[in-house]
Image 1: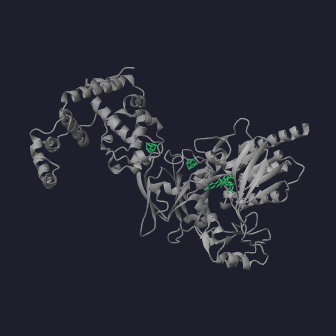
Image 2: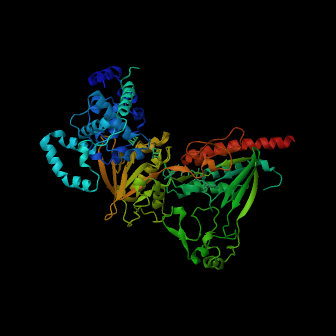
Image 3: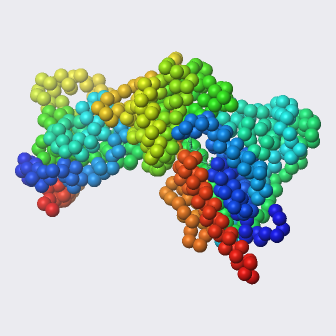
Length: 210
Length: 430
Ligand SMILES: Cc1cc2nc3c(=O)[nH]c(=O)nc-3n(C[C@H](O)[C@H](O)[C@H](O)COP(=O)(O)OP(=O)(O)OC[C@H]3O[C@@H](n4cnc5c(N)ncnc54)[C@H](O)[C@@H]3O)c2cc1C
Ligand code: SF4
Ligand code: SF4
């Protein structure tokens, strides 16, 4: 994955004067940002709206205003729940959800994303869980999530979710045996090769000197 | 039509709004023969349904009356109402248009005394008030209607109500045996001036039009303010008749939106600025208007009007496209939700009434015009094909205010005159 801070410095040097340009080149769907006409419908339609520090509308303006640090270090785009309310409403048809995830992922790669951000933690645990075998092991995934803040916090969390876990067991949606082995993809090596290739392509795009 | 002129010297004008009337009159006053075809039972189009005109806040009746006088004084124009062009064949200088004329069930003996209206019982939604109230099924479209002749709605032809109308008329004007008629009209040039229609507000789902009585459109608001309208000019809200003193105007309702109309309808900013002054006029210092906007587009000299309204303490501007509206079941108030762009503040503002500044779309999409024209991506006529004698005029070509619509119509009349002049010269030479 390369050195994060190094990537960040490279980007800083290359796009010194234009964060918008940087976003256009390196963030997924970033070239749409300039199309925003600041109407505010995305901000007003967001199901999670009141809980964000910066709404998508504001983030797009901050990008254009060159507020690089504030945007990349913000936890706002990590709040996106992918409900797509904004995308269907945007009068300019910006792929807002995708841009939010693109920004979050870019900040993460640069190593500047906020620490202890629950969505980011969850995403990382999900990712690490899923790339091992090509399948998500839901039991281990849930447990890693519960115990991420230490043993006691994990036990508390697990106890509070007890009834849901039992209901899932009864409905055969949770298999306790998964803890030991779990189901896997047949061609694990193939999956790993594919992911490596995808990562190469992505690095080329996001870290390339043009 | 006099027998001496060649049919190729006739100009056919389709649509009898302010644009079609202007084009017809400009050509007729230059001595050209004109046939003016209007779909509805009256000339005047949508301007007849406005309360006042921006920027001077004068009454549309005035401009309409001048044009009707010009029309009555000119023998070169033949007017066909309840008529639609269904096909056009031929080429520049020699077109043949097929025109379907729907029955009016009232002949020209009518003196507009109104006896048939009083006799008839059935009521239908009144299209001249955008369906805000009902009218009798025997009606005069509106006070300025031309021709001043009653109309029977087809739904009562062949019913008892039809017979009632017939026996009430002292002049033998009600003729229930009228049938649809088809005419062929030959013309050298065609001016297409079928105007605009409001975008279907119910399609803007988060605004709840059709669901909430107190969310209305700007065209309906014109009717509320008009003394000839459904409330006799009282600005009250539909749900409970309460005086609407605190009104929200929502700009770009349907316009500038890839999900709806992609163009800016250009006049709706001015319409809301104007309508804020109706509120002022009706309620004085108590009247409050709040205009929610993306940016105000008061084009060229309309800027003065905008500056004037900006100084009005009763008018507030909020830079934000409203995200959604809900109507409070108990109070009937509408609550507007959104985020403003000047500070990114989240709001939930309560108003008596919400007026959607609804977008304008062509009433006949260019693709449905029975002749070839160049269309823009919104279905307006962008221009004439090379070598064609079919020209667009007024709001059929773009979302225009009356002034610009009239300019565009005069231009179209000139183009049409050039075509028929060429035909006339060719006739002379042969
Ligand atoms: C809310 C609102 C407020 C406005 N206020 C103002 C204002 O204050 N000042 C101003 O300058 N402008 C104003 N406008 C704009 C104004 O309404 C237009 O400029 C004007 O109506 C254009 O006239 P027109 O003749 O081109 O179209 P229309 O008025 O639409 O007339 C078209 C005519 O064609 C007829 N027709 C339609 N289809 C056919 C067919 N197939 N065959 C035959 N006939 C057909 C129609 O029945 C109609 O009579 C306002 C618009 C809105 C939406
Ligand atoms: S809805 Fe679209 S155009 Fe409007 S502020 Fe959001 S991203 Fe920009
Ligand atoms: S004129 Fe104003 S309200 Fe109408 S579409 Fe344009 S910007 Fe929006």
